Amino acid sequence: MSKHAVTPFLRRRSTLAALAGGVAVTAGAGLLLSSAFAAKPAPEIVLPKADATFDYQIGGAYTPPAGVKALSRDRGAKPVRGLYNVCYVNAFQTQPDAMGWWQKKNPDLLLRDGRGRPVDDEAWGEALLDTSTAAKRNRLAKIVGGWIDGCAKAGFQAVEPDNLDSYERSGGRLTRAHNAAFAKLLATRAHAAGLAIGQKNTTDLLERRKAIGFDFAVAEECGRYDECADYAAAYGNRVFVIEYTARDFAKVCSAVGKKLSVVHRDLDVRPSGRPGYVFRTC
Image (cartoon, rainbow, N blue to C red):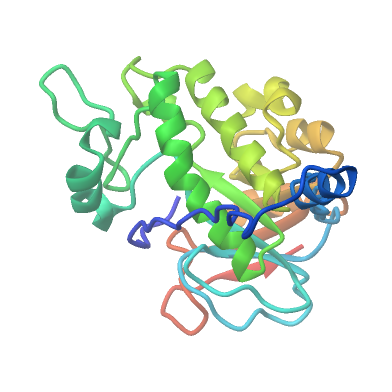
């Protein structure tokens, strides 16, 4: 999670234009119609390479350090030509400065407590989105799906939907099953757009990764919680690891640094040149 904020936006979905003019009812016309409406081939999905030097730039974009082969940036930033670009999307919670938009446009999609107040992730000042019903998940998928389409249009190769574990902060109002079902909708949308999709944290859902459709993992502090090996086994070492302390970073580098992409970043993931900026790789 990050403290950065990007106001949500809706992207109109394209529609098929009506065929102009009359078409004679002949075998030839039938072939023309079949061709016009034939399903497009599925776009190619490119998976990240294991152990590609990685940078985590969701707090602000900057010129990648030498040797970086893959990075993650916010959906409002531009990808970097020649690198493997992962698009960060806050899919299960709101951005801190977007509450007004949600309250005005889709107030019922905010998870609420018994008094009708939004349920917050107090650590980051973000409200949880309500994934508890199929109807709400479908509506959320249209909104977040528009952002995912935007990632693909911008040139990213993959997407990481954050806060998959929001059910842990919901006071029992959400379950793993709710978020897994929503994640599956997002995976389907990502694959349709030609994007790989990464599981963001939450080892509790590793067993459901294939049913959901996840392709790789982005794991924050898996070294701190001794979870890196679990992600590595599940995703064939296609795991981007972010550690926020020097001790945990050293621990992960020693244990799995030759197999996984590991980066040490400051907790606020500051851009290069800002006070407190940290970037190290194994």
